[in-house]
Every structure is written in C-alpha cells, then in structure tokens.
Image (cartoon, rainbow, N blue to C red; front, side, top):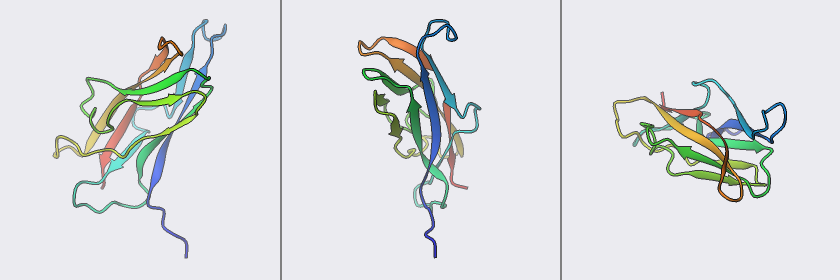
Length: 143
C-alpha cells in the first residue's frame, strides 16, 4: 500500500537574467506562476485536522543567481497578511532554493482567504538593488 503524501510545496521558479541588449542593459527577475491566484498555501486553524495533499509551504527555486548576489523575499508593509510568513527570507548566491515556513494563523479569524504580498529583491554584494518584482502568495484556510 502506498503512503499518503501529507506535505507538499507550492513551487515558484525565479529566473535572474543579467544585463543584455534584450533587457535594456538591466538585471531582470521573472517568476512563474505569474497569475495572482496561482501561488496558494493552506493553513489549518488551531484544533483543526490538516487535509492531505495541500501545499503548506512555498519552495522558491532560482535560476541564474550569481555568487555574491542575494535574492530577498520581503513582505510588503501594506500586506494585511505580512505576519503569516514571518520575516524576510534570503537566498544567497550561488544557492538556488529556499523553502518557506508554514503560514501562521490569520489575525482575523473570520477571514478564510488572505494574501501575503511581498517583493523579490535582487541585490549585489554591496547590497545595491539590481532588480525587483512584486508577486503574491494566497493563503487559504483548510476547506
């Protein structure tokens, strides 16, 4: 009998592209999934029973991050869900992945859906910002 998978990740792939004539001489960041509601995490309320096979963490996979560069996942101050995935998360080149913590509880228990708004910020070894994009993670209470 096969084991039931009880924990899965939502995958976000990020590509770091160096300056070129195609990028207008600038560093660029692209990510997938791109649509607003495609990156989803589930949270089980206190005393709830987690449903199997629902993603509870985000796994960010990065292509093209160079040695000395840092990619930060930084919650936006305006995000209503800024406390759901605590703190700023970093990937330091040449590493290529980071797995988020599980989403914490909502500050408003009446909400069943929340949005963790964050910035992906590419920095060089001198902490200078090279590129930035602003994706979101949707956090849903277990159905």
